[in-house]
Length: 226
Image (cartoon, rainbow, N blue to C red; front, side):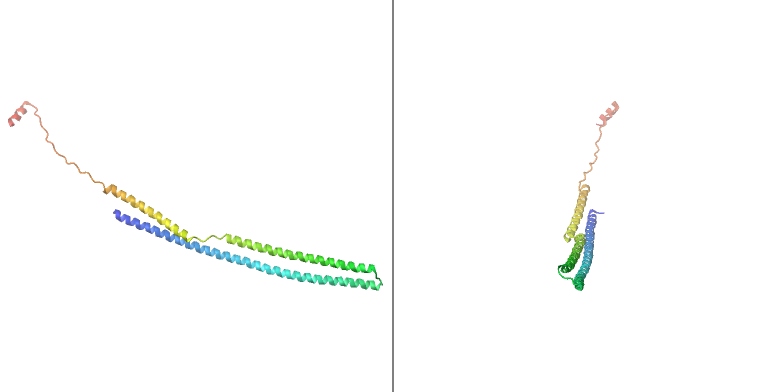
């Protein structure tokens, strides 16, 4: 295969790698975006359920507060009725025995004082129950807020499109660098094999050898030839 054909195939392969890498990164980016959208929708749905539970709890606590108010009002009415009944019974008893004066009034005042003390105790218990309901309401609100904060903190940010572009560009530069490096190595190989001039082979020339006479007969023959 010629070096030109090899370069064309190598270039095609490098561009194919760049395209495949870009497609893979784009698909990964799309899947990650879809996953983040799904997670965000799930978190919003769970937070909405938490808020609905808190709302239902508020409704329940408000109903309990209204019932506590009605119960307290009924207890006050019943206690005041008992006080008036006890005072009337005591006055009737004293009247039937013809008792009057300071001792009779002291007994009535004692009955009324005990009744007022009972009313104050009921008012205090009622305020304690209201306070407990308020504390429970605040605690449930803080608990719901804490759950929602934990949900939203668990979310991860959406992938950056700029980061995707930079990643694809970095991969393209890396493949281009590898392609250029391979091309430079091919050029060096071509220069080492085809660019060097071959030295001509020297021709062999025959040099006549001088023959020296070995004896006197040869010398005589040599001079005779002359």
